[in-house]
Amino acid sequence: MANVKNNFENTLEIKKLTIQYVNDKDIVRAVNEINIAIPTGKTLGLVGETGAGKTTTALSILNLVPEPQGRIISGEVLLEGKDVLKMQIKQLRNIRGGKVAMIFQDPMTSLNPIKTVGAQIAESIKIHRNMGEKEARQHTMKMLEMVGIAGNRVAEYPHQFSGGMKQRVIIAMALACAPSLLIADEPTTALDVTIQAQVLELINELRKNSKMSMLMITHDLGIIAEVCDTVAIMYAGYIVEYGTLVDIFDNLCHPYTRGLFDSLPNIGDRRAELKPIRGMIPDPINLPTGCPFHPRCDYAKNECEKTLPVIKRLSDTHYVYCHLV
Image (cartoon, rainbow, N blue to C red; front, side, top):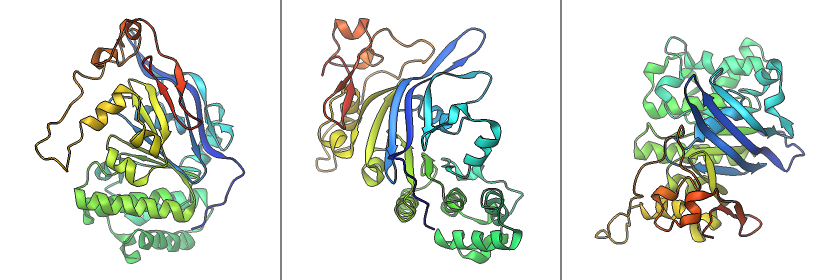
């Protein structure tokens, strides 16, 4: 399943993206002027606690931020050089499921229970690859076999598959049209540890074989270490640290990034105590003044409470959003 290579250095570039959710009383500042890029054939890991803005960022790539409450205030989302936010409905339908595919975190709710898995996979194939019924069925069987499921199970329904097998069906569906970009939104959260490892290995292997780019959204640093090339640490709608895997794992700088690593169990010393980050992620309706992390930061100074940080570049690949660096 070779993907056609494009001439763009980055499959995806997000520039100064700001997204808010607005109702009669409040403004939820979900994403705040973020910048990320995914080079062709590479994987970016987007890491952060629940409520950090990760899924909203992913939805913006498909221009699926829910309206009318969700509003993209500013910024660009460039897919192979073209701004998704300026596309017409017909163009968006062509990229959704075609150039960009998404794997959701819960396979139980991602499949239609009254349609066979084969029919659900074949639907996007017929739309995006212009195949007839017979050819689409053959391609569907091939995709199921690629993810380790017997092709003759195309006529079975979701309830006839285990949780891990359902997630494999979702992966087959996502990759059926050879997308340029795969978005994996916590794809192993609902699975047990053994199945998690199998699914991650499968996603990584298929991504490398097809030379596609991937956005891996997770709160699990182990998954990041396993599959990603670059990492963006997200907190309260901001990218607070960004760099290669080596930058983040060996040369981390932001206090929040350090807190994430310090809260991991120490396998080498079972008596070592965990160091959780104190407090809770702030309410995006009422973000603190200054640096959004300062109420939880052990190193915060007066400047941190009063003014937003600016991006500080530590190298060509590594930047941090912090007064203290």
